[in-house]
Amino acid sequence: MMKILVCLKQVPDSESPVVIDENTGWLREDDLVVFRMNRYDEYALEEAVLIREVRGDVTVDVISVGPSRVTSTLKKGLEKGANNGIHITLEQQGYVPPSLIARLIADYAVKKGYDLIFTGVMAEDDMQCQVGPLIAARLGIPCAASVLGETISEDGTSVTVECELEGGVTETIVMPVPSLLAIQSGINRPRYPSLSNVMRAKEQVLEVIDAGTASAGFGAERFVSLSYPEITSKGTILQGTAEQKAEQLLNILHEKSLL
Image (cartoon, rainbow, N blue to C red; front, side):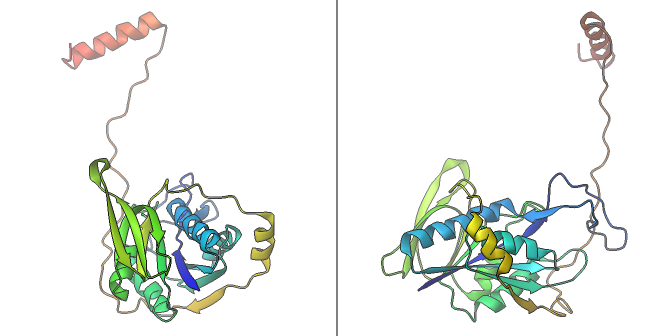
């Protein structure tokens, strides 16, 4: 039986307002902020489910670190086909360093004997791609980033992966199992949840692990500051007919010595 662990991150929806909390220095969370699954992680989960459909003897677990709201993302993972959900509860306010997230997930995974660990290629909110490689480093297993495809050997002892490099170049590497793969977007087409999985997810109980004071004394990183972009010069909207707008534009270009 092959075991795959998929790491999910809950991120604010891009349409939600971005407000910096004066107390924490990080993003404010209120009723106006909508959270959802990181889209890059959807590809990682879909790839794990596709492997299970091909091989059959595969269990897919999803795991996430965060406060109680993370439950909705784990439930969504179950709706999309995962077998089990693991919630590492961390009620820490403000910025949470990726090295801490990686440590918590690695500490759980090392006891479970996963053959493959999948993450999305990056997180939508901070555009970082650190958690996956950090997990691999802590577990002492190989890691491949920007994975465009993978083929698991018949005996399940190795995985051949195709990775995207800069300039449209790809490389193919063979890694032993266990390994960690950071899945690139576009590798597949994430499915919509089926009704049967939605009903199952509603009743299924998540495995809950309390991280407690895991961040106490954790000094690998130090959050410095978060600020809004500097306000640059505003644009000018020209009013009037097409002829009037053209004349106004011509005058502006002359004033700026651009003509």
